[in-house]
Picture 1 (cartoon, rainbow, N blue to C red):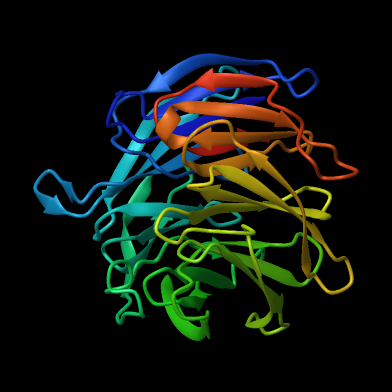
Picture 2 (picture 1 turned 120 degrees about the vertical axis):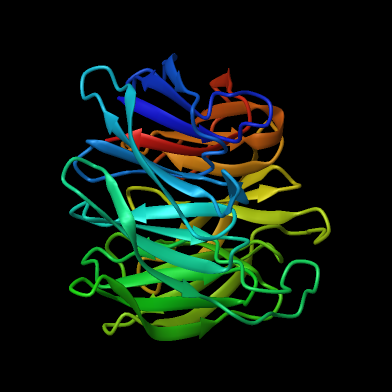
Length: 351
C-alpha cells in the first residue's frame, strides 16, 4: 500500500513524502516527494482514495492573512500526487482538516486564527471558494497558551451530521450540525473540558458509543459517552503519564486499534506512546503499557489498517519509527525499522 507523510518544511522542501509499504513483512520504500507546499502539517485522503487534501500551516500567503488548503490527484497505480487546487483558509496556522464521507466538502481549523471553515469540492477534486466560516471567541486559565481560541482539530460523524471541534484555547469541544443545503455550520453544543486541559484531538470508537479527547496542556484523556442526539457526556479523565512536567510534557495524538480493544496516545517531552485497554462494556480506559518512540517530539503517529504496525512520527529528530503491535495484548515490540524524514508530523495510509 502507499503511505503519505506530511511534514514541516523548515529544513527540507519535501512537504509530502510518499512511500510504499508491505503489510506482510513491514518493508517500506520512499518513492516520491511533493515540494510545492509549505508546512503540510496535516493531510487527509477521501474515501474513494482518489484525492489527498493538505493544509499549509502558515500565517500569511502571498501577503494575505491565513494559510491554505490544497488538493491533489492520487495516481492509483504509482501513488504519486498531481496538484489540483488551493484556497485560502481565512485564518492563520491551519493545522487539521477532514473530508466528509462522499468527498463533497472539506473542513479546516485555523489554530492561530481561532476559526473553522468549510469548502465544497467538485467531482474532479478541486476545492471551491469558501462556503462558511465561524469565529470562536474567549479564553481560559493559562495566559501563555489560552489567551484566545485555538481550535486544533475537526472530526465528523459517519453520517456527516455533526462536526466536533476540540478548542485548546477555550477548554471546550464545540459540536456543530452541518447544514448540507446551505453549506453552513449550525451551532449545536459546547462541551466543557476541565480548565487548563487544552483539548487537542478527538477519536470515536468504531462500534461502541464512546469518544476520547487527548488534552495537550495537562497530558490527560477525557472519555465521553456519545448520546443518540450527538452530544457528549463526560465519563472519565485519566493521565497519559504517571508523572509529568507541565512545562515540558504535552499530549499530542490519539488513535484506537482497529480491533477496538486498545487506545494509544503520544506524549511529547517524555517522547512516548502510552497504551490503554478499552473496557468493552463502559468505554473506560486502563493504562497497560508504555513505549519510548526512540526519537524526539512524537506529534503524530498512525496504526496500519491491519492493526499490525504503529508508525511514530518524531518531528524533532527527523524520523519515523516502526513498531509491531501484538493485537492480543496491545503492546508494542522494540523498533523494527527507522526511516529518516525531515520534520514528519502526519501519516496517512491509502487503504
